[in-house]
Image 1 (spheres, rainbow, N blue to C red):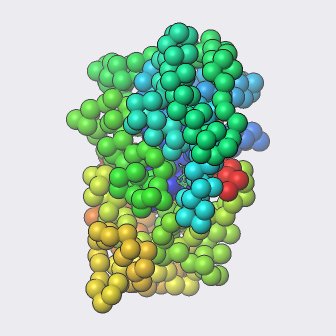
Image 2: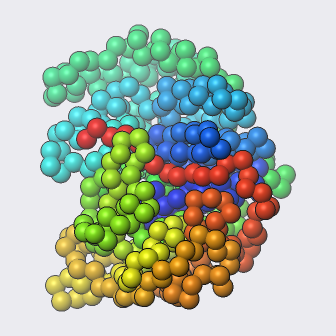
Length: 444
Ligand code: IMP
C-alpha cells in the first residue's frame, strides 16, 4: 500500500482497515518525516516512525531496511506507547536500516538555509542528509549500534568530513565523537532486542502463509526518481522502494493498492498545477481539515489530477485504488478534474518529460456536477448519489485502475468496499476509530 499523490493521502485509515487481516505490517521508506495521529476513544497517539500495526496486539510491526531511523525519536515513541499500555515487544527493526544522526538534522537545516528562496520546505528531520550518507557509503546502520568499536570508528570517519564542512563552510559548532557514542550506546542497550534481519523474518512469515502489508510513507510524486524532483523526499515511496526497502521479492506481491485523495493536497514547495489558491481550495482545506496537526501548517489544496493518478498507476503497477475523503467534496456545486496539461500550444495527457512544462502548464479540466447529499453513511456504490458514483467511475476509467475502497468519512465504518479480492472487515469498529496522517512540525 503506497501513496499515489504527494503524501497525506489518508494511508493511515487504509492500513487501519486492512490491519485486521494482516500478521505483519512492514514500513519500507522514509523516516520520522511522516506521521500518524491515531485516535482511540478519548486517547490520541502520535506516531512518526513506528509502523501503524503496533496498536494491534496480533500484528508484528517491522521497520524495514529502507527506513531511516532516528533512535532518539524511536525510543521516545516506544516509551510513549508503553506508558499507555501498548506493548512494543513485537516491534522489529532491520539491522540494515540507516540511522539519522544528530549532524543530519544540522545539515538538513543548513541545506535549506543555503538554498534561500529555492528551498524545498523539508521537514527538517535530517531525512535527505541521512539518505545522502547512505548513498555516499558514509552512513551508520542500526546494526552498528551493536558494536561500540565499529560505531565509534564510523562516527569518527563521518565527523572528519562533517565537522570540516560545518566549521569551515558554515561557521557552525562541531560535533563530538565521544558525546555521540555515549548517547547512542544508551539507545543501543534499549534497542538491541528489537534488531534483526527483518528480510529473513518476513520471508519466513510468508513461507508459513503469513499475511504481510508493506506500508508506504509519503507518496509517488515525492519519490526521488519518479517525483517532482528536486521538490521530493530522499527515498523511494513507490513500488520499487517496497522491495528494496524490505528485502521482499516482487513475486510475493498479491495486490498493489495506491491511496489517493478525491482531490489533491501538497505540503512543502514545488509545482502543483491544479492548486486552488482561492475559495475552492479554502473550502477543501477547511472541510478536509488539511492542516498539519502539530505545526498547523496549511496543506495546499487543489482539484483531482488524473494525469498524475495515471502516472502513479503506471510507475507502481497499481492493481487497485483506495479513494479517500470523497465526503469532503460534498456540497461543491461543480467538480473539476484535470485530464491534461496545456503548454505552448500542446496538450500533454501524460506526466510531462520536462519539469518546466509541469511548472508552467495550464491544467485542462473536465467538469462534473457535484452533489449536495451527505454521503458519510454510504456502504455501497449504489448508496452514493449518482453524481458521486459517476465521479468515482470516471476516476477509475481515467486512471485505468479499479477503485476498490472509497472512504466517505474518518471512521472505519465510513467506507465503501468494492474490491474484487477485498472483503469488508468484521462489523466492529475496531479499537481505533480514526487515523489521519499529518505533516510533522517544520520551522521553515
Ligand atoms: P523531507 O522528506 O523532510 O526531506 O522533505 C522533502 C519534501 O517532502 C517536503 O516538501 C516535505 O513537505 C515533503 N514530505 C516529507 N514527508 C512527508 C509526508 O509524510 N507527507 C507529506 N509531505 C511530506
